[in-house]
Picture 1 (cartoon, rainbow, N blue to C red):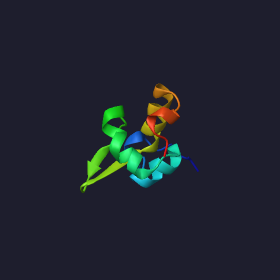
Picture 2: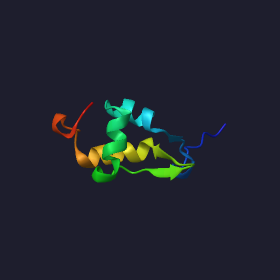
Picture 3: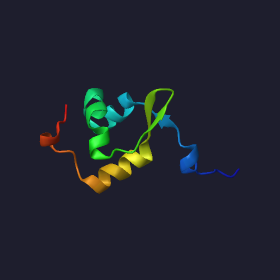
Picture 4: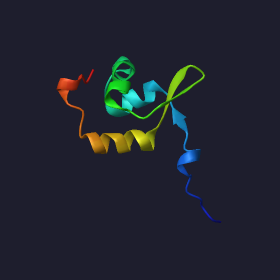
Amino acid sequence: MKTLTPSPDREPLVDVAVVAEHLDVSPKWIERNAERLGLPRRKIGGRWRFRMSEVDSWVNNQGALSDQDGGQ
């Protein structure tokens, strides 16, 4: 049986809480800083949704989140 790798278009979208846990910050921190920091996201049904591959790529391009930028 052939296993297909999901394309980025088919990657599940996750909410703020999942991204916050992944980045070890609070959901409020994500909500307050996502636009300023350029965190890739899209609004669906009035709520922000993220693709983890885009979040990970963003982190790799930004470097680690510093304590100065907020953490929790």
